[in-house]
Image 1 (cartoon, rainbow, N blue to C red):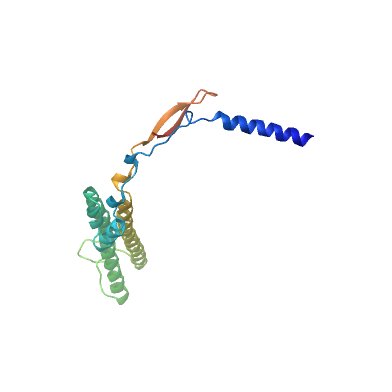
Image 2: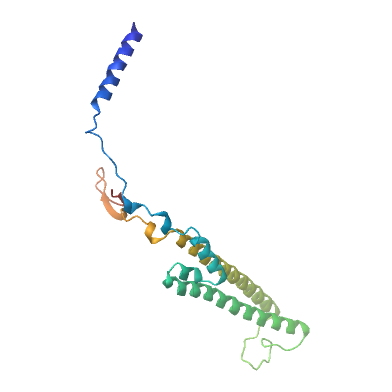
Length: 195
C-alpha cells in the first residue's frame, strides 16, 4: 500500500511539472555574431611566426604583432643586461690581471707605488674582487638570457591573443564595499558579464 501512495504522488508531481512548462515561458538564447570570430580571420601560425621572428632578432616578433611600442622596451631590457655583463666582465678581467701580476711578483695598478692613482689593494682583496665581479658577470648573463627568452614568450603570447578575439562585454571593476554586519569598508572587485 505505501508503494502505491508514493507512485501516485510521484506521478502527480511529475505531471504538474510537465504541464506547467509551456513554450511561452521559455527563454530563447540567441548567439550574437560579434562574440565569434570567423575562421578565415584567425592565422593559426601567427604565434609560431612571432616567436621565430623574436628568436632571430629580438623585437621582430613584436613588430610582426604590430606592437611597435614594445620594441624599445625589449632593446632597453636586453641592452641593459648586455651592458652590465660587459661592465662586470671588464672589471673581472682587470682585477684578474692585477692578481696574476701580483702573484708573479711584478707591479700592478693596485700595488704600492702605482702612478695611476688607484688605491693599494692586498692579494686577498684582489681575489675577493675577482669573485664578486665573476658572480655579477654570470648573474647578468643569466638575466640577459632570461630577458631574451621572455621576449620570445611575450611575442608568442601576444600573437595568441589578438585584439579581435577579446570580448568587450566582460568588465572588471575594483571597488570599495561596506559589509552589512560590521559596517566597515572592504576592498574588492566585481566581474561583470553583459549579455
